[in-house]
Length: 89
Image (cartoon, rainbow, N blue to C red):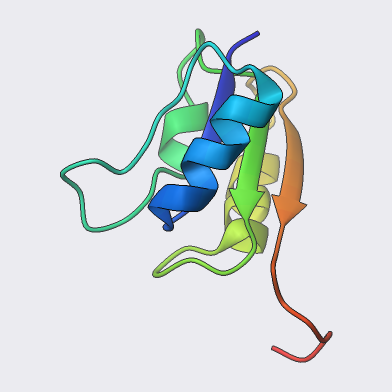
């Protein structure tokens, strides 16, 4: 299964890849920001995304909003992950 893992922390990305058995990982190597909604746009994009809730620029909920605005593409399942300890932002 192709999975997009979007997390700005290297260790979190590696743990997610190892624990999910993901065969497809898109990371932010060489980039200032992790991948997001643009990586879920192409027709051959993954249909499952594991998103960090808190990321620079566009956070996990922001990626969800951007993807859901596009009605013409295939459905994408998104799971938001966080290490936050409270509900406050």
